[in-house]
Image (tube, rainbow, N blue to C red; front, side):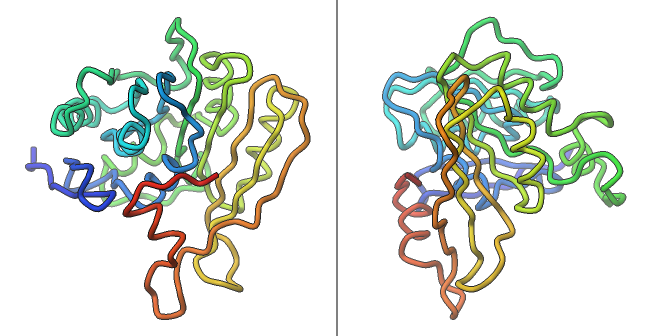
Length: 242
């Protein structure tokens, strides 16, 4: 097995080891963490946690929060455990090898975050990395609806679900939330001004009947390619997306 590579996020406040191939901790992970409305002492589940990047970013922002992460790949879980230790968070974390289709933790969470694979069955092209293929697909038959089902099983009443995904898949997520979640918030992530969103954050409350809200969203880059001040505050200072 190749040695993991080391990266830093949140202005080097979070140190992460990740495989040299396959799953990559990315801007999406940090944005997902920033959108989680957790408070001190809350319990958070990261479904498909990879090496723990998003969840550990949440814990960096929220003192005393507790994190459980699940992922189908054992090597990701091993690295997530190491990453928690590297960041002094081993007492606030639990990482388990589990498929989202099967997971039922027996305890309910205040918040769930997830970054499901961006390509479902039938959409994928063959990846040159078998690990990357597994990270993209998890299971051959898994769908976005399965991820929402896992959230329903493991989330407290009135608990929050936060998802980051392709903007063109937002309709599928909203359909899966219908009748089970409410107070849905849609937050587009614009690469630049006057450019179509490629990613969207969807946040919803279990068993709520409140109406949906579409936010103005967040512009990530200036015309010169630098991050906007708002994006930089999230990526470097760990400010939340409200």
